[in-house]
Image (tube, rainbow, N blue to C red; front, top):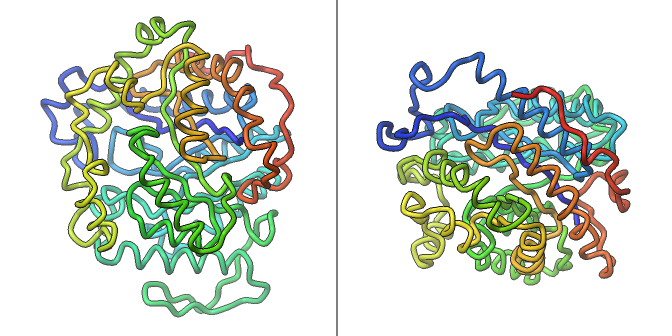
Length: 419
């Protein structure tokens, strides 16, 4: 198993009545009413401290992501964050997992290829290159890409990026959306023929075929937990089998919210309000933002309509215990968290690359560090050896970091930059 610390970097102090006063946390939240640049600067530094601490605690990777015009997670440039992490973790056996820079919004997309090559060089060959399609909110509503063009632009940009990393000669690109007379990247990645590529997905079944055909890691990103993801992941593994690929669990990644405390009861005391903040405020947006006309391909649209389990649930009607019972969040004592992660996520979904979200909603800095440290000490070591006895190779992880990892040396050391 490879286990990475994921971070959204949400606004941690939205007002108590946010979801009743404002239309959405995405696209339209008014900055001048809700935020302060100096306080946001603290959020950025706390986020970096939390991810560096996770690296010191022995996590296999640290994850950033890209979103725009929102208070749910505002790293508009994940590569700025990734460059800090790459430099801060030099000498450490931790992957820089960029989940990642969105290709359709970069014109030309070789800007992503260039910046990822920089990160691979800075980190000494530790980059995992997430190449996401991007959410409709970011790409269509915030950056103005026509929904009908979104997926076509992505697939052309994906092919251009892979070729730009690998080509030995300068080449011209004359595509439908991008035309370049000379493609000649400086620098190139250390990892050859290119860094391992992960493609996130959250509902489009056509992404299964795309991931398998391009031999990349498919990462299911959802906040509904493993129980809700079961049907989707079964569909993915069926495509893997039907296309004659080996059922290597490292072909799959999954994102899970996790909160660990001394006991199940203490977990509720510590984390309940932060979990509810996340689902009530950070996921507050109109349903039409999720799938504007033309954004979703026909197969996925039909599948969504035919399977009620894939339609979004009204999370504002749920409370902490509902989220835990339904598996949206895996929370409780170390024993509870270990067992549920193993049964529901690792074995239940056949996942080899696990991402855990340990800073949830309004969770303050010190509590986040506590959650990271307790997970690292009491949960991570028990999951790490999973799949080892089956002899699978994680081809979707930096080669120099594939060997079993030694026990963490700094799991009890607090990160700097406190509140």
